[in-house]
Amino acid sequence: MNATVVRAENLGKTYGDFRALKGISFSIQAGQCFGFLGHNGAGKTTTMRMIYGMSTVEEGQLWLFEQQISLTPPVIKGRLGVVPQEDNLDDDLTVLDNLEVYGAIYGLSRGESRARGKELLSFMGLEDKASSDIESLSGGLKRRLVIARALMNRPEIVILDEPTTGLDPQARHLVWQKLRSLKSEGVTLILTTHYMEEAVQLCDRLVIMHEGIILDEGSPRELIDRCVLPYVIEVHLPLSQVPQGITDRVAAWGGEAIQVVDGLFLYASDGQTLWHSLEEWGVPKHACLLRPANLEDVFLKLTGKGNQE
Amino acid sequence: MAMLRIFARHMAVFRKIWFTNIMFNFIEPLLYLTAMGYGLGAFVRDIGGLSYIQYIAPGMIASSAMFAASFECTYGSFVRLHYQKTFHAMLVGPVTVRDIVSGEILYATFKSTVFGLVILAVITVLGQVQSWWAALIPLFLVIPGLTFSLLALCYTGVTDNIDKFNYYVTLFLTPSYLFSGVFFPISSMPAWAQVLAWFNPIYHSVEVCRAMALGNATPGLLVHAGVLLAVAMLLMPLAVRLMTKRLIV
Image (cartoon, rainbow over all chains, first blue to last red; front, side, top):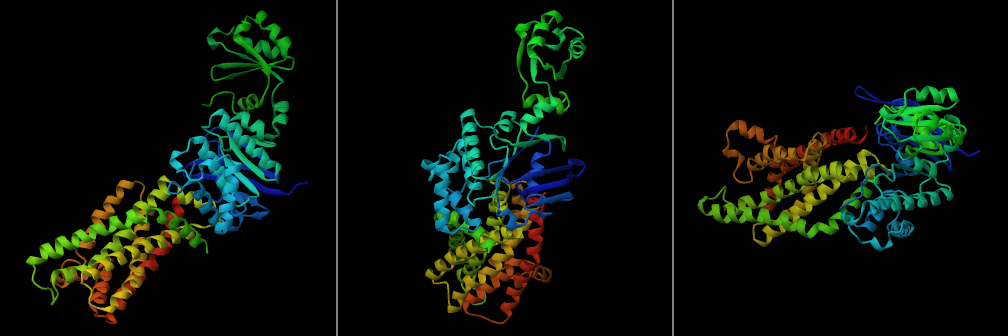
């Protein structure tokens, strides 16, 4: 059994009249990749900020490395690596200087910091950018550099707040690959994302957050098995053209229909049989897609069947 | 010492920009000195036995140092706080807000001293320094450097928009500078204005710089230094508190 490195009980946060976090509890084991999945404004970043010491714990309790904290102290911050949501690279310094100077903030000597910086540049595929200015980097390269910077102190936990938001697919896959290799070295990863695919690709366990609460928790597979039926048919028709009463017919048949904004999803244990029933119910097959259920279905179902953005 | 690591970050930047930075800060006081000292000075009779340029030159050291500290901790700190998020980036490391504030103050004080030193060198070359006591000016400049960086950083702590630094410059720095005794003796002003001058930090700094440059070192100068140091000590906890409010939410 691995040690618990982060534990929260009834963690809450209120900004003025806005209750950003409404009492969440979770625990993260060493070596895991633990995900927080949710819309913007679900409370993910608020939770991360409390862990990495940019926000105080005012409601509930938070333990890091089994020490209860109200504002993460420097000695614990020294064991974390942080990739914030917003790239906050130092524009006044070159790529390698960014790593060197921030390594020094963690107490690395000049020589160590330089060596570690170079090592991480090559780990992140940035070795030919060492003396470039930050401004000349693309979004993907900046993100990789922020990740490299977060690894300077050989952290035990790396916190990644939406690490791949705004990246193109190649850059995203590269970042995922790097995160997997970190995990294989035993580093604990804590990740927030609103990309389902990212959560499935990386997370051992995850929580689904919505409006400041945790709706469910488990491995991606567990959540899919527990929350939705294994197959889904997406009906790509305007709701006005979908035959009346289809929801009831699917339910009577033994499936489940979920309406999300103005899309319709039909769930079934046996996808093929449902598929063959479509014509009979007056739904044209050419407007439908049959696929296995995935985490997105879980998310759509749990986060309130569609009234969100 | 975490604040020294923050200072090291600033010095890494300074090593890249020092030349442009010093040139910029050196030309302006030099222009004032020549325009006022030689230009206007031709029409001004001696002030207390000093030529006009002799009178204003030491004040240029104090004012140059004041502007350097003030600009660093207004525009400079605001950019790091608000636009570049440098403070946020550093604060996830093993440091506290106090370390970050101390690093800012240390750097602004360092720059302030360097710019004062440059002007001191210039007026020495121009033959406007009369005493070896002047060699202590750079050491003294650390004190007003702390005071002005903390004043500026406190203002930055309550400012949400970079345009609002115009107020700080126009309504605080410029009047302080003009009525500080750099250009004319405070004793020529009405009694109430002379009392007010004691609340003007740059006045104290000008008094010390002029006395040292002219070799009039008296124990009274310690009072001026003491006032500046007391203000700095009072402002430090306030600056930390204001920055904490901005950074830790």
